[in-house]
Length: 406
Image (tube, rainbow, N blue to C red; front, side, top):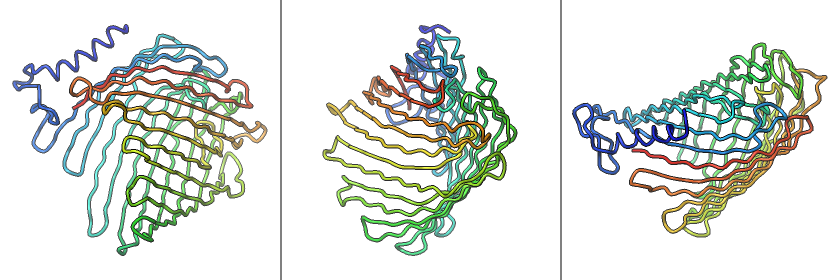
């Protein structure tokens, strides 16, 4: 599909829903804040959306060590359905068309079902999700197709006026393919559980203490570890203990969150565990003016990367600015970096991989454009320095997005 055809398709969808033409015997147009009558069935309301995105990237890798330039056009549709006051469903397909055959055209999809219920003093929430995406990743150094199914059940129980218990159970099933490298990772199951006690020390200060655990079961996979194709099976158990404090000023213009603890991974198959690793996170937000927000965050974490079959010990720091300009424009600027250490677990003879990644990005958007529209332009650059050949890269991307939604 050509560039003009993509934009014309997006424009035709918006025109159809905005023009006031007759569809299904009813008027399509609707006042601001309302959906057309033909998109309402009793208590169910459907909120449609559409967007057109044109991006040009330089230096992205379709295969490790081979940076390329490409322009990608995307046409996305969205359908958010309010099923009731507590339940909603969402589906969004995105068609991507690339000028470079090394980055194949794709259909990305996301779907979600969210809801909740109250049983006595306990609030229950359920979240189901699905995603299918195809995009270049620094972690694999190549164009990677990923598919995931996720489920989470959470409960929040207030024990006293100042003490609350939060628990959750979750499951994520993921798979990935890097066709250019012959890498195939079949469905990997990740089961998680957590429990957290939150105590309100005052109206502006709270403390928390929690435990979490996970079990990952990955069947026999063919993956790229460093520059070597490795075949193996992985089973890993992770246990974590965390505690922290949260504070916000009375005027809500300043806030601080601190968390720290330890995490331990044990490989039942496909690797060997190590000693407990420290984990921490800190987030600070400052709002000097009503239209300005400054944020900084930093942390250290230990996770299992199903894409590499290795333990990923990462340290990160990030700064961001949100600024409203002239009452209508939104400016967002971000800069940060990550230091990742991939511990070789699938095959002990393969050296560990160390990456140092930096990024900076900026975007300027107009939230109210032609009644229900939005438009934004953005620029981003990411640099990765790796001790493994083929994984060092420095792609940059320019992006124009036009969106519309009810």
